[in-house]
Length: 309
Image (tube, rainbow, N blue to C red):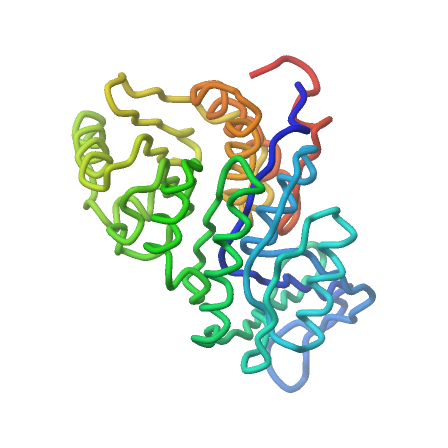
């Protein structure tokens, strides 16, 4: 299946995922913690940048917009964008440090994660809003990847601008204020995020009632709730809900699985697939990526090998 004609703009919170990996042979005499002899360092694109990476890995055209600091982590992130063939529309903000997640891995097991982050300045966000408006004419679809780090502080305005340009808007939400995403084309919360907003459902009919009420209240065309081992369920205006069972795979690491799901949805919809076919494809992609360590991307070949979903 050819996804190369899809042009997707990803906007949101940019992160650099850094991994320090090595062997563990002893416990520290200073505290009851393992000592990791670091033998390898690896940097990967994280947050909204990982969404763009997945889109590019599927063969589609990815454009990325967000804010980084004028620091080593920001420079490394932009080098990775160039290596992955992602169009760089990133804004540099000297007033902040780039969001960095440092994970220490010993014997294939994550032992600790250290986070470094800061909110973008008002000036950087203003610049991004203007650049976003210019970029809309160059793409077919917009993904907004919210990690709650301040990169989508103007999300209401961005949604309104994209709607004015008749661009579909897919949002991966964060937090308990979903009203800020009103007017988007599709929202893709996971089960925990969904229950945080609408309350825990007693059974499947109650789940469906709460989902449809949320979809209608926010004016969404589609609401896709990802449900981990229970697959995912799509709610669409005027149609019966669609449930897709999870792909039976060994789960190694769920880091970034939501990024892969929304990236696959975006590429498929922008390429002209139906919403139902796009959801089935995204479900398959999510099942593949949880078998990988850390934030990862899947290739076009991995997704379309074997039987089609």
